Length: 300
Image (tube, rainbow, N blue to C red; front, side):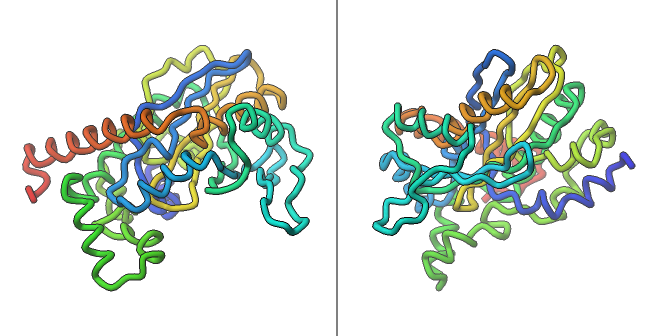
């Protein structure tokens, strides 16, 4: 069944999306694929505590991750620094070993802040423009739901001071209109293009409220989309891998390993992250200001 009810049926998953990136994605090519990575760490958040926390992870040069491999098995990239014997060796997995080698070259270790790369959802290249447009619409609606970006940090700060423990605030602040998690009524009124009704159930599951970049997928055979979920739920990311020919295990491993390194932030700098966050905040403010100018949002 290909109708908008599928989107609504899958919205409980969409409504758990924690943050909505407008930072400039990273693009690169392998021999067999074009890859687009939306890094969670590049995303601006109204929560100053988690902003500093994520930067501290990059400064420490430590990051750990898990991902779902081609067989549906969850693989963990982590080396324990404790005196105890567990997690001292990496699993026999090509992606994890490629990431570990690149981390070593960049001076990073597989430890510290965590992120999870979900299993791939394969979509038709011809449907990518619809998927990107739908995600852009969700991103805009969800930014509007947060309210004025200029006042968001103060609202989150005041809410933390209103009696919540700091660790609870880090995890839960933003679960309503003040923060970042969308409620189902946002999708019900999101005004998505009618083209979204053409998407399959599986393709609808790929939707994440992030902003990507224009790209011509017409010359590619298939596209895999994976969501990146960090350990704190106030930002999210995405990996898009477009395969030039038939997808092979080797092609996936090479593209995914490089994408995971990029997703971790190991191959960028604090200065570039801060620049991306400023640009992201400016983009969010523009969305809010346009909404106010149209009389659809109340000026704060």
